[in-house]
Length: 473
Image (cartoon, rainbow, N blue to C red):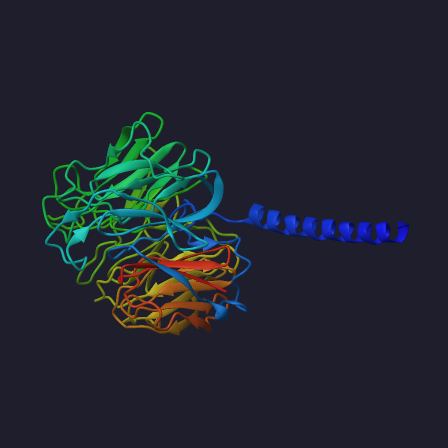
């Protein structure tokens, strides 16, 4: 009897130890779980998740499709993700994704099933930048975990504050970003700093009338506290087209934007076709027109903020003419510290946004075409920082179509990813060497223009076959 009790006690103790170990493992996994709260992962829009440890150069080749979700329309959005959202009393990891018929979805990461859906309006236009001319929810939401809410702009021109768990509209919202959504559209993601939410407008194929602008909304009072018109409030044009919206310097609160053309002569009128640094209330602190040439010299991208070791804080933007310009933050009016003809001068593609890694200290560009004057090719290009703080070619891997709009890159776990546009492939490269490590091959059947996210061992990307895809090991 005594012996049996000792044996049973040993078994019970062993079970307890195993359960405790499992609890600690699951608990640690939950504590270390990462949210992807906004476009580009952070206010600076660097595009790097520095916490990814599951998908690495040694494991990424094992990626395969876990599920796909029908969005009902094409998408150019980068998804966002929140872990442990309480839904009906239980925690769920949710990925949030919008599409161009105006629908915004919350999707269970584990199963790929819908948790909630909202339609935030859409516009039927004659612009064929979207296959059927319909524009809806284009810019990524901003997730506020502290208050269990998100901020997103709908196809009806309003900024919404929605409950993360249910999708319900919160009191005092929505607030108008534009009163003319039939002519003005928000392509870019919402960005938020110090209680102020920023959204932007551009047009549909530059069809007039429209007045591109940035709007600053004070969240606490649901009121507009500042507006910036690159071309002025009475001149058409000056759209903000970048998918990241605006970037924000977390140290100063300064806002950075890159603008489109004014529909007047010159097209660089006022602050159009400029890189602009603004205060948090949208007062101009510095601006520069970098003297652009080409068929279409809009800035179709959001500036990226980065700081190489031992160098000044920098801001860089890629123009549709294929040129990359880099400035010292706080000194934008002095002109570019460097300019590189990364793509072809006759390239008019939306080139997206570079990504910067604080781990590798490389700037990554998913390049849309072969440069006509430099040695850079279409595909993935990585630039290192020299002793003089200037960018220079580190490596490049030629892949995908030439002269094609492509998605911005994403960096995580020592791997850089991007979608090659009409090639319909998601690609992954070693972030240090440029070696291609993985491709989605024929899994995705539509063009990829929205940047992927890589978080907690999974990759999520939307495509023009109307689906959100989830890949994992």
